[in-house]
Length: 160
Image (cartoon, rainbow, N blue to C red; front, top):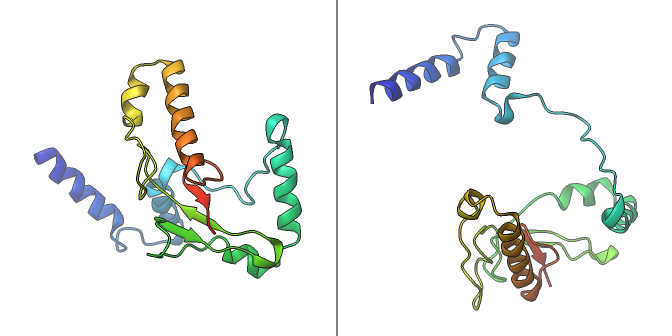
């Protein structure tokens, strides 16, 4: 308990705006506290889109090239809805036939739906160091997600 209290005291002092007087000191503290403890890279690096991903990258580039800046901004904003069983939603661009996304966030199976499996947490199969088991789990998760109307597993399924 004493160690935790000491760490909290140090953190409070570091975060106190009176400790960091200059812009450089505040920037250094910001970098210290930021996730990954490294500066962001802007613009974000471009993906290569090679191999199995080439077609997907080509399609994505084609649709994004037709979007206005406002449409690009809007598809990155999430909103909540109780009407479709999604954890969150991302709006679509109707004129381009892009329906948006229904976001899900359960790593142990598809959340908010019935008739799905509850898979072991990632840490459990990861601790086995069994690549075949990890692949089989991911394949089963993806198959269930796709069966529920998913565009791709991770956190998204198609809206509409």
